[in-house]
Image (cartoon, rainbow, N blue to C red; front, side, top):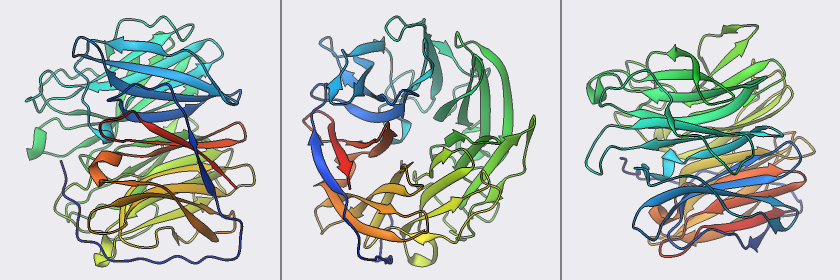
Length: 386
């Protein structure tokens, strides 16, 4: 779906500080598992979801929870489905209340089809899941996907996704589907009528309401990160997080990551502007109305695929992929303090770029965890600690 650009180094400021450490963490995924995604429950439980092969050469969406150092049993959300197994299209499982769960994923009718369809399922206990429902009104053979989900009200979830109504020949829409507790569609709406077509969306709930971060698109092929917010029943106009002015006549499959606690927001992203590919991040103290000056997170030949979480003291932990040498790519992470100071980098893992997939972070309770891919093996996980 994409071809990485030639990259050159970018730098970031550091100061004397305790470096993050990465400690391997065993997990219950099976050999051949892929597409990891995390979410955090309100009680501090981390939720890891993934796709894994089954004995009958099919695939299943599964998840397990981690509280302290103890994993729950593995639960199956859906199986024998035509899951789209691309790293950027990772399914997601979230707990919306103590007894309500929601999941979403993307399917392809066949391995050769260009069509993608978005499905949802719900559960009242996290064990028994409803029959999958298509999450959009359009049934045409075009792409619907690159979704993110958040609990957005009492008994309500919002699914943010992209739709290509005319395929590669037309614009891509940023969409929102409102779902009730059973996963049934309540409302569908278009939020932006021209966005980058293959970059995942990201959504959080702030003190003011929903905030979506996504890669935008202009008629001049500028593909910078924008945000749009839902406050007092109305959507704002799209607004650039920072004017990188990245002009590229291709889709980089490289999105923004976002995290929020109350009015405190952090966003990280990859840009290839000015032939200087790098990962940047910003903070906001007003739910995304304004942003700080960007901090450069990456230190060398960045490939992006960023993930981001907030920690207890208001700082952010960012992960990304960066070139190690001609053959290997590193999974890296570092903390950015609340004042915008980049702390030392820790190498979490290394391997072939495509095999590492799209690493994902979560901060649940007082702990931070990361997951990534390893071809021929199971998913890899680690705990990040100061």
